[in-house]
Length: 199
Image (cartoon, rainbow, N blue to C red; front, side, top):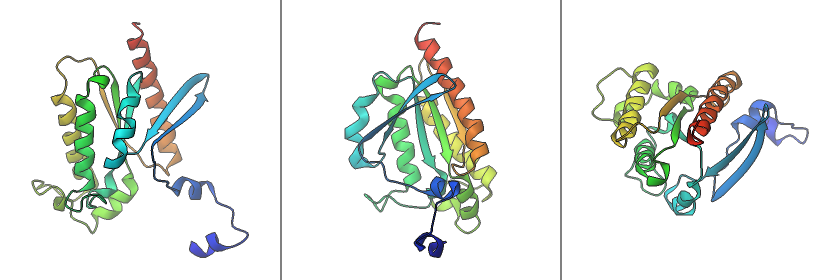
């Protein structure tokens, strides 16, 4: 599609816009309204160098939405070529789950880029990042393995059931998928907010 994009008459489609990606640096705050319900989303950079900038921003937050790019299971960190990105995501997720500021917050985990994950599994063995994995190299089996790992990290940090984990498999360019998931997330956040207010 490079020829279309380079054309002087090029106008991006909705899908083109959805496929754009920008690296988050620092803390970016967005406020919007959905059916009369105000939302304030704080987007932060997940890279190691970015974390010290945002870890203090979450003292009065209702819920945490944590994104994991499933398709990056076989890619290494830019900062450390010995560490797989999926392992770094697990490490950060575990740190967030055990952080005292997040003790009573629900966590919504988005296992994102399911479309690219399915494609990549056809030619890139899942076991290269998870040597202990002996299952089939299929989307369903590999995704189940990742879900279990993140669930185990969450369960390890809970002494009392004050918070819940909600896991969603998402494809950010599939608008019907995102619309359905966002409806579910909205309900989760509202329920969490009511619980924190004592209702």
